[in-house]
Length: 407
Image 1 (tube, helix red, strand yellow):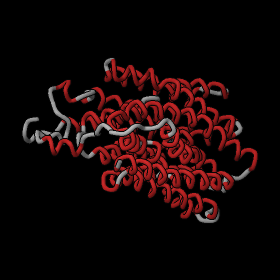
Image 2 (cartoon, one colour):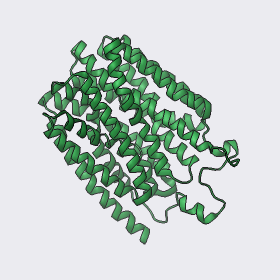
Image 3 (spheres, helix red, strand yellow):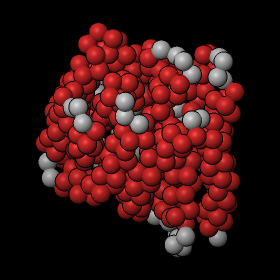
C-alpha cells in the first residue's frame, strides 16, 4: 500500500455494506410493510402469505452451497451483479401479482439471490481485514438495519403515494443501485489478487499472531456443532416475528405509518445490536457479547406483552427486539472462529444452510400461531423461553471451550 492512500479493504467494506444493506435491509426486511397492504387488498390469511418467507428460507438453504461456490470460484463481481439483478426483478415483479402462488414463485428467486450474502461478507472481511474483525463484521452486518430503518418510512410514504405496487418497483430499483455500483467499482475477492496484504498486516510475526485465526490444538467432538446451532437458531426463532410487527401494530389499531415506524425502530435495533455485539466480541469475546444481546431480547418481549396501550413502549420494545439480528448475522462467524479456529469456514457454511432451513419452520410457525390464537402474546412467551435456553447453553459452551484451551 502506498503511504497516504486509503487501504482497499475499506472499499471492500463499502461493497459489503451495499450487499447487506440492499439485499437484506431493503428487500428482506421491508417486505412486511408491503405484505400488510397486500393482505388488506386481497384478504389473504397471514399464515398463507407468510409461506413466502418459508419458501424463501428453504431455497436459501438449498442454494447456499451452489451459489456461494460460484461466488468464490468464478468471477465474484459478475456473480454478485447477476444474481442481484435477478433478485431485484423477482421483487419488482410482485407489483403485477394477483394470485397467492405468484408470490411463492418470487420467493424462490429471491431465496436464490440472497442465499450467499452472509457467507460472502464473512469471508470477504476475513480475507481483507487482519485486525478489527469483530468491528468491521458489526459495521457490515449493521448496514441492513441502517438501510432498513431509513427505507421503512420511505416505503410507507411510497405506499401512500403510489400504492404497494409502486413501492415494490421502487424498492427493487434502489437495491440494484446500492448493491451493483459499489460491486462493479471495488469488488476483489482477496488482497493477493491485486498484490496487497490485508488491513492490519504487520511484518512483525508476533504482532500478526495476535490477529490470526489460530489452528486449535484439541479435538472438537461431534455434539459441539449442533450445540452451536442450537444456541443461535433457538434464539433466532423469535426473529421471524419481526416480519409480523406491522401486522401486530395494525391489530392494535394503529395506522400503516405506525407499523412502518415500528419496523424502522427494529432496524435501528438491528444496527445497535450488530455494532455493540461486534465491538464487545473484540473486547470481551463472543460469549459475553452474546449474553448482552440475549438479555436485551428477553426484555423486549416482556415489554411487548405489556405495551398494548403505549405507542412509545411499542417503539422501545421494537428497538430492543431488533438486536436479535446480530445473533444470526455477525455472531456465527465469530463464535465458530473461537470454537473451531482456522477451520471455521466449513462449519459456518453448514450452519448457515441449517439456519435457513430452520427459518422455513419459524416463518410459518409464528404467523399460524397468531392465526389460530388471535394473539401475539403466546409468541412472545415462547420467545422468552427459547432465548433463555440459548443463554444457558452459551455459558455451557464457553465453559467447555475454556477447559479445552487450558488443557
